[in-house]
Image (cartoon, rainbow, N blue to C red; front, top):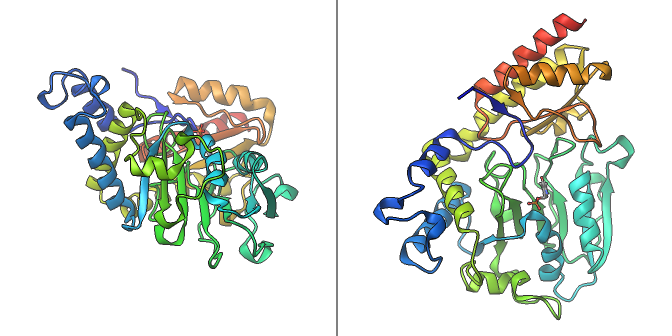
Amino acid sequence: MAQIYNFSAGPAVLPKEVLQQAQAEMLDWHGSGMSVMEMSHRGKEYMAIQAEAEADLRELMSIPDNYKVLFLQGGASTQFSNIPINLLRGKKTADYLNTGEWSKKAIGEAKKFCEVNVVATSADKNFSYAPTQDQWQLNPDAAYVHYTSNETIGGVEIFWTPDTGKIPLVADMSSHILSRPIDVSKYALIYAGSQKNIGPAGLAIVIVREDLLGETLPGTAAMSDYKIQAENDSMYNTPPTYAIYVSGLVFKLLKARGGLAAMEKVNIRKANMLYDYLDATDFYNCPTAKENRSRMNIPFTLKDEALDEAFLKGAKDKGLLQLKGHRSVGGMRASIYNAMPEQGVKVLVDYMKEFEKSNS
Ligand SMILES: *Cc1c(COP(=O)(O)O)cnc(C)c1O
């Protein structure tokens, strides 16, 4: 098999060790004679797999006991509506920070359920930075404050935790969860789709403080009610069992690698390798403000966009795949999640240098 490096924003690269273990256990999980895919979600074996995944995630993220961990279907996008449905709790308005494409989608869904106060936006600079909290206009009547802590498309990451006092803080951490330690106790709710930095697509993880549950909008579907999901251990219906199993293997691997503090060190090294080079050359440009440069998603453009196609083709020949940027930013985007080896970033930077030399 050819050595490739997959820079896709999502679904994204998974750790090779995890894929190999899933492969080894594919036909016969621990002597059960069957694949995890074939197991009853109510059976003793699968229940243990899911319980262990939850326990490992709790340990990795130091999730306090008064938080529920939910394994849900519908991706992060379903949570865009589930959040107002569950967290408005009698209030009529919610606060949202707008830092780009995913913020806008979250805002669009919330507007179906309540008034949205946009506390600040970085639209003035094509969403290339995040407004600091002194620029936020918080509404004291807001039911909660929502922000996207890493904008996957713009590559804008917020490394500080907003202080919203008593107003519940909600974060979409889809594309940086597990990349660094987070103080969960500062949040009312954290959510993430699985297919960026966790596991296969088809799963969303919601971590929610339990006292906020139980006051949904009238007419709420059972599937959207976090309290019902929590009371049923995310088994109100059939959960995405295989995605949860593979995610559980990822959690075990991260623990074995020293947990999130260790992952953060590696992620800083990887991101610096790429940003240091982008800063040292005029051939490429990184549009993101320095203080918000994502460690996970790194957009960059070529000085001459007529070279984009040649760049992508040359990259592909070297096994460097899925580098094309999002249409709203243009150019390239390298997503370098936990599962991207340091060597992958090194090979990319070497290729970029070589391409610069032969085209300038
Ligand atoms: C990918 C992504 C989403 C959407 O995730 P789905 O699981 O496809 O619904 C939401 N927010 C962020 C920040 C993302 O990166």
